[in-house]
Image (cartoon, rainbow, N blue to C red):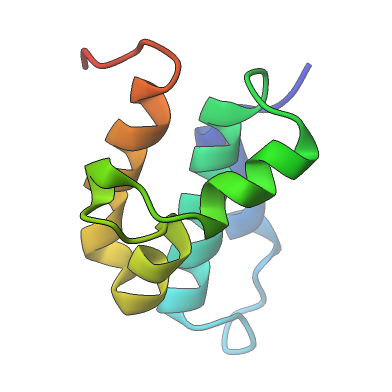
Length: 93
């Protein structure tokens, strides 16, 4: 069974050495990518997942998910999660 994103956050937090961990933006980026992969894991192949991150989308203003993440991880969460969940028919919530 694959751990849920909240489980991944807790596991990661338990392994960060105080003063030697990655900066906050790196952690947020990894958590966002993990969340997106969690939503897309059964609906795409590995190649499809790579293409999903690289290709621009109408729903994202002709930008790719990677571009949004690179620009500002914090503001990328909501549109990217909605986009990933929308592809699986999970728009509510």
